[in-house]
Image (tube, rainbow, N blue to C red):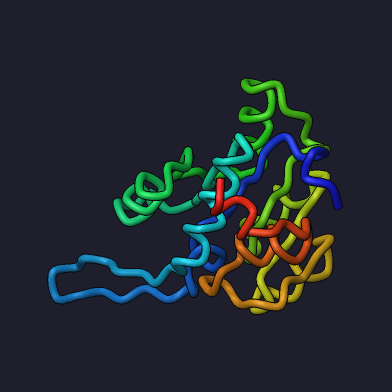
Length: 163
C-alpha cells in the first residue's frame, strides 16, 4: 500500500484512539486512555503533510483536548458520519476512494463503506471486521495509528524522527 494514494486519514475516537473504556469521577468528569505511540504516529503524518481528522459521534471536551494536543482537525457530535465524510471530501477536494478511514463500531459502518481504504482495531465489532480492508493486530487505544503507518505503509519512524 502506498501512502501517496491517500488524500486524508480519518480516525474514529472512542475504540480506535482509546481503549473504548471511559472512567467517570464523582463529578461526572470523563477520563479515557490513549496511546502515546499514536502521538508519534500523528507526528509522522504531520511531517508528511498528510491531512488527518478525528470524526466522533461524541461531543466531549476530552476529544477536543486530545485533538488539540495532537494538532488534528476534529469533527465531533456527528449524527451521521457518512454525511460528514461526504462534506469533508467535497469541501477539501478529497476523493472518497482516497480516504483511509479507521473505525471500530456500528456507527462507523456506513462511513467505512464509503471510503476507498479502511482498517479497524482487533477488538472491533464483528460486522466492522467483515467489511474493512485491514483488521489490525492491536486493540483500540494501543497504538493504532502507529501500527497502520509502520505495518501497512511500511514507514520507518527513525527516518522521520531524524529529520
